[in-house]
Every structure is written in structure tokens, then in C-alpha cells.
Image 1: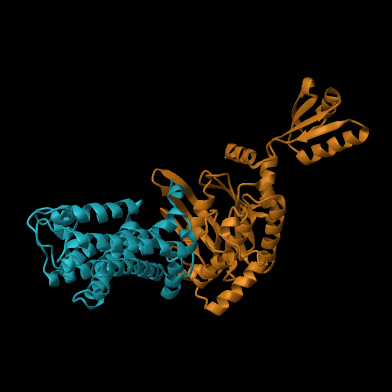
Image 2 (image 1 turned 30 degrees about the horizontal axis):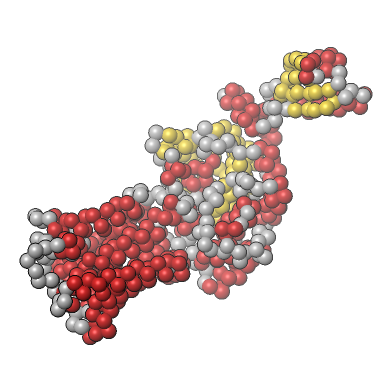
Amino acid sequence: MIELTGVSRWYGDVIGLNDVNCRIGSGVTALLGQNGAGKSTLMKLITGQIRPTTGEVRVFGNDPFSNTQVFEKLGYCPDIDSFPEHLSGREFVYRMGRMMGYDHETGVRRTEDVLQQVGMSDRADRSVKGYSKGMRQRIKLAQAIFHDPDLLLLDEPLNGLDPVGRREFMDVLQGLAMRGKAIVVSSHILFEVEQMTRSILLLHRGRLLASGDVSEIRDLIDRYPHRIKIRGDRAREMAGRFAELPFVVSLSVNEALDEVEVQTRQAGDFYAVVGDLAAEGFGIWEIESPDNNLESVYEYLVGAQ
Amino acid sequence: MIGVAFTGALRDFVRPGRIVTWLLIAVVVGIVGRIWVGFQPGQELATYGQVVEVLVFRVLALAAAIFGMQVLAAEVEQKTIVYLLTRSIPRPSLLIGRSLASFAAVLGASWAAWLAAGLGVLGPRAFQTPGFWWDAVVILLGVLAYGTLFIFVSLVLNKAMIYCLLFAFGWETFVPNMPGDLYYLSIYPYLKSIAGHAEIEREAKGMMDVLAGQVTGMGVPVAASWAVLLGLVVVLGGLGVWWFGQREYVPREDVE
């Protein structure tokens, strides 16, 4: 569906994307990377807003730049929070739909359909200006799915949503995926991505760092020691027990904070032992894994290459 | 698809608040014309011509700059261009549809100012005055010429509004009064030539004569004026459509 071959994109002296090769097929694929990693550049290339400086982008076998044949089958939910603020949500979606070539009657009907799909039917006649962040995201999704596209690209769709909004938004996406749509979602939050899909593309500083199943990324991470901090009432005694474990690489105790910091190669097994200690009567107040975030993943992966 | 782009854009351009603003501007033009004719008794027709050239043509240029920027430059600034460029409407249709909508809006604002000028200076007999209705055609030509030029500039340059306003109120005011051939590079003398208004008869030239481009007394033949302005519309219109089809339009901070 999407094929990038040796794609690089420069903005003057700044490189946005560096020699990316990948293929994206059906199902939900997550584009994962920190801010500035090149996710939006990749999205803009796929949606034909910009051209690659070198290399080739193909969507449905065609060059997407300004290609209406591609746009007929592609829906795009951009990361921007900009709208024609004087319009109501319904007017905005309707107008976007009309520009996909639908006549008035079909446009009105499809507008109502997609507004219902994103749960905005009852609030769509209010001005976009007064919408909450979540409502704006839903309206953006509505205009993207108006023409029932085969491929849906969502650039940071969960940004700024509260937990309930995220859950609802993800439900909508899952519904679309179940209907056989190919969905590409960009995000900088690994946790979020894991809830949506197993298939990821990991971008870092314009380079495609890893691709495949998210568990492979987790495995990559597991090659490197996890740092875990535990606070409890018998820190020194806990540390003694951890020292006996074969998968603990290092440990340190901070008695002033009642804290043990452990580095382990098998985080899952280690957490099981912590559970056992709690069952034995050790008071465990807090478990923190500073590594369990995407920045650490990048550090690991960049370090590994 | 051009029709869809046209109607959608026109609804944006002629919102109630904007209509009121342009009607107020027209009323001001009419009032100024009424006062102006009081200072030049016996020269109503020439005064009407001067009001059209000094005020109506500038209202036209101002409206062309403002609505010309709304065609695409404002969409880029507000980042909403992404919605337009990921539709299945071809870029030429999008540009043509939105440009026609801007021309319609400029024409409405300019004709309102022209009618107000006629009524202010000549009163109800303006409608029977020879040459009055011809100005409607001249204004239409001016809308196309200024509109096409400003839209083209907005497609090519960032912050085009500044350049367009400088052109409309700086270049178009001073160049027609300068000796030499530089005035061929402005739109105003061609419009003035096609309009063919009578000029005020007096020996000493004043500020109004400067604003009306009547200092040097040079003119352009009418046929040449038509050729130049229509040529400008066709050439810049075609170039604009081609350019818009080739160029990337992403909000500026996204590029940085």
C-alpha cells in the first residue's frame, strides 16, 4: 500500500528524513518517535504534501504528490489544531466532503454518518471555535474518514486528549481497523501505541531505527539492563535478596531514602520476585522503572547500533 | 469541482461582518465624493472621474489584496491548507474556484464603492450620465488584473500582503506621476486610460492630481491598455496555476 525507497527529505540544511526504506501494508501500523524524529515529515510525504529530496514514495503504486487518484483512497488527520473557526463542525466536515467530489445530498448524508461514527453528531452544529481538544480531534477524524478511505493516516491523534477521550478515540480506531482499513498512526508514546497495534516503525532523528512487531522492540530493550527503583521498609534486607538473583546486573542501596536501585536483564522475572517479597511481608511502597519510557528505548537502540 | 471550491470560498469571503465593513467603506467614498464636488463647482463629471480613480480604484486594489490573500496565503498562514491539498480536487480547479470567489468578492466591494461615488458626486442622474456604466466594465477589468497579480504574488512569496499593499498604495500612486517609462509597469495608468474620464481643468496640480496620477499628463493608448491588462491576466493566471501545481505549500514553522 505504501512503499518508501531510499527516501530522504531536507529542509534547507536540516534533514527531516534520512534514507528511509519501508513498506506499510494493511492493519494498524504505528509510527513511533520523539518530537522531531521525522514522523510528520513521513506523513507529509505519504499524503503528497511534500516531495522527497531523494528516493521514491509510492502510495497505491502512485507518486502521491498532488495526486487526486491517491487522495480518493486516502484519509488524513493532520497534527495541526487549526480549523476555519467560523464554521460549525458539521459545515467543516460537509465542505471537506464536497471537495472529495460528492454531491450535496450524498455530502449531507455522509456528513451525518461520519459524525455519528466519531460520536459528534449531537454537538456538530456548534462552532468549531468552542470545541474542546477532544472534539476537535474527532472532527478531524470525521473529515478524514468521510470518503471511506482504504488508507487512513493519523498524525498524533491522541495529543491533548484526556484518558477518557483517548479510550474513546482508540475504540473508534479499532472499529475502523476491524472494518479492514489500513491505518497509520503516529505517536511519541510507546504505551499508547502498544494499546493500538503490535506493528510499529520506530523513527529517531530522521532515521528508521527499527520496524516490525512491538515485542521485537521490547526484546531489543531487554538485551539491555532495566533500571528499577524500589522503596520499602527493609531496603538493605531486600537488596541482599536481590543480590542472590542471577539476572540482577547491579544494585545500590540508599538507606536514607529506603530505596534500592537494581539493574536487571529480565524485568519480568524481577517483578515476580518483588511480588514474592511483598507476599513474605516486606513493605513495598513504590516501584519505579525510569527506563520504561520511549526515550530510554531510543538510548538503548541508538547505543546498540 | 471548480464550482464546489468557488461556493465554499465565497461563503467564507462574504461573511456578514465583512459585507458591513465594505459597505461602510463604500459609504465613506460616497460622502467624500459629495464633499469633494463641493470644492469643484461646475466640474461634476470630472470630479466623479477623479473620485473613481483616486478612491474607487484604491478600494478595488485594497479589496484585491485582502481577498487575494484569502485565496491560499491565509490558508497557509492558518495551517488549514493541509485540508485543501489532501482532497481529491485537482489543484488547478481549487485555485481557479477560489480565485473566482475572490474576484466576486472584490467586484462586490468595488462596485459598491463605485455606485456610492456616482451617487455622492452626481446624485441619481449618475445612472443617465454618459460613461458611468462603462466604469463597471473598467472595474471588472481592474478586479481581474489586480486580483490575478496579487494571487500570483501570494503563491510565489511569503508575507505577500505587505508587497501587495506597497504595490497598491505606493507604487501605483507614485510611479504614474514619474517621468520616463516606468509607469508602464503599473496597472493604474491602463485602467485610467480605458476609463477615459474627463480631467479637472486647472493650471496648478495639487495632491488630488498626484493621487489621480495626473501630474505628468502621460497616457497609454486604450487598445494597448486592453492588450496589456488582458495579457497580464492570462499570463499571470496561467503561471499561477502552473506554479501552484508544482510547489509545496506547508505552513512555515513546519518547514523550519
